[in-house]
Image 1 (cartoon, rainbow over the protein chains, first blue to last red):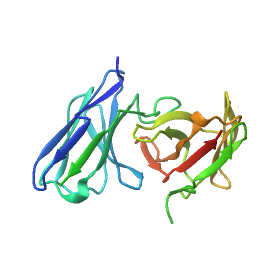
Image 2: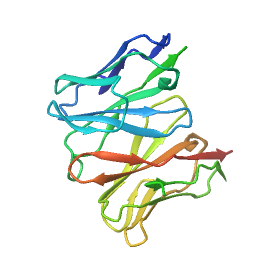
Image 3: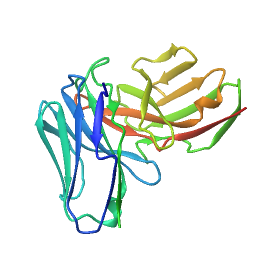
Image 4: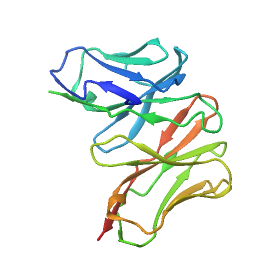
Length: 116
Length: 112
């Protein structure tokens, strides 16, 4: 009965490869997010979708492309992986984007990406 | 100036003491504020949120917000070794987007 799940948990790959990370939430939430947490533990938002519509698109390389096939899923595809992409990527979800309780975000377990 | 600032620590307190974690933010228009706890190798876990000036208490945790001073804090009473973790302050700086800006986190060590 995991609320926000991600696959895979660990991803080790070579530079230049393309990889995807999948996220699913069973909370019935309308909004989903991708965050990157670097080696210094700094957590930074990358993208957000609300009802399958992109609402936050931070300044990230266009090698990163999110895709939301439906409200419960938000995937992250990364092309031409670079050493600097090594980090932990967290998916999160919230009921909405504003208002008491609505915007509270719940995080998935994370995907640890190591680019060699 | 960073948008959300925290002292990275580590903050070390003895078991049973009060731990005080502080956070300042730059956007005066920010409306909602969150504290997350993150154990090593785990995902952030929501502890509390606060919207209004003043104190909000939940068990051993108290969040304090002072919008005039752009300051939010988290007090942990009767600290336990299991409270040892990194505490992340997050601020929603853009209304109606869910865009949370996180501080770099404060590492708390509670010594038995």
